[in-house]
Length: 193
Image (cartoon, rainbow, N blue to C red; front, side, top):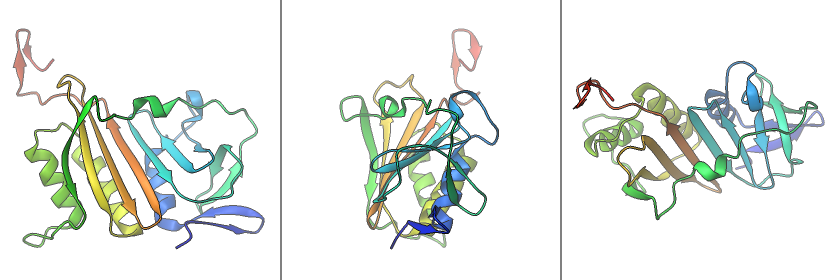
């Protein structure tokens, strides 16, 4: 399947992938052009500072910063190419542990695949925004059935979840950052941290 095609002399992102990228980018202009899509030699990236989606797929798009229209057309942004260095945020094998891996997520008791992933994350005591995680997993699953691995930092103070997956010839990394512990956890200062 082609995830990016050329139409009307512009690059067009497949609808489900477009929705996933749009979900992770900032809704309005901000520092570092977070409301744009970053394109490099082999991937497209969107982030709003709290979530990040990096999608690796074959394309012929010139690297740089792009507006993405509601229809999924990528339009070259002429205002510079300043974008956060997101690759340094990715968890590595040294600083993370895999919570689970699964090629086929079995639907249990009528649960959807994304809800099974959420249940596995909850069982592993991982902090995350459940609505956000459910939405991105649903959007990615709409592209195709995926093989998935969830990673969490070995440092329990770092509240990050990284999910890596493959959908056919496309691979993705989704990160949810800055999730606070539950208000029921106490420390020497009382509730929260």
